[in-house]
Amino acid sequence: MPQQRLKNPYISISIAQQLLELRHGQSLLKSFRISTAKNGPGEKFGSECTPRGRHRIRAKIGAGLPLMSVFVGRRPTGEIYSPETSLKYPNRDWILTRILWLGGMEAGKNRFGNVDTAKRYIYIHGSPETQVTGVPNSHGCIRMKNTDILDLFDHVDTSTYVLIAP
Image 1 (cartoon, rainbow, N blue to C red):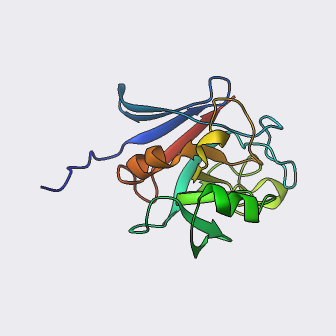
Image 2: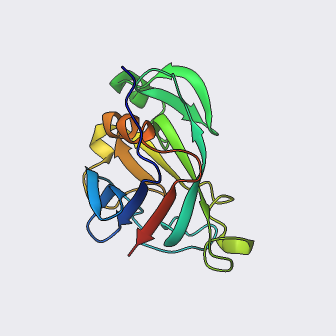
């Protein structure tokens, strides 16, 4: 039997707590440990910071692909991440399993110009388990464990509201 989806869940992200929560109204549905930007919060293009404020999911990428699928430029490469793949490409910023591409909703803060979250290619995405430690270490995106992003992906839609707080 297919899983029934709640209408209008939203995502709350705490940079300080390195925590992503899926909520519906006042109810906490799920909670996940994450890793945000090692450079802290910020919105400017090229800063490698995690943008704050109100966002929406603008695209869901990777439905139906296997766990640990590798993406480059939002496209699956056909590879499945493994320790050997990691050694072969040691400088790759690993984006795995699923991508939730975010778009800012606040003009001048995280939308348009040099602060545009979507144009900065900020995602919630799967990462190697060693990179999701609850310690900020990304290049701006929100990193999740692969089984966690797979779970979250199935509970949200494009346009799901995402609030990123410091």
